[in-house]
Length: 123
Figure (cartoon, rainbow, N blue to C red):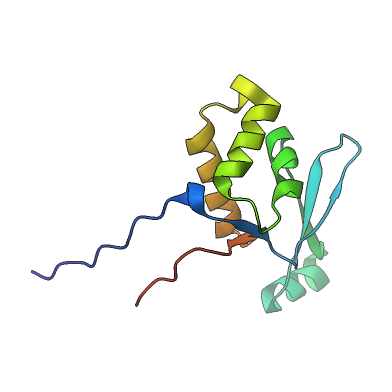
């Protein structure tokens, strides 16, 4: 039987997130961050013309996401951002580390951010 190569474990707390330059964002009347994601590609263009779908999808962040988004600058680590989150929200931010790591994994999966110091996968 062939053994799968084990991928190195990544400590997300040491990673440095950076916002995608393609993502436009603003705040709404509730002072919450709203990300504007452009719907690109052939299927989206067809859906926009035929079905009247919007060119941009708006993603409204919750209070904790709204606090974190402007702090993502490509210099602070996830650990530093977690400390700022804990300072701002206290016990409301708990469980702090699993929650913030999952938040950044989701942002990365949608390509809203990238990690400037994340090791490349070896194929």
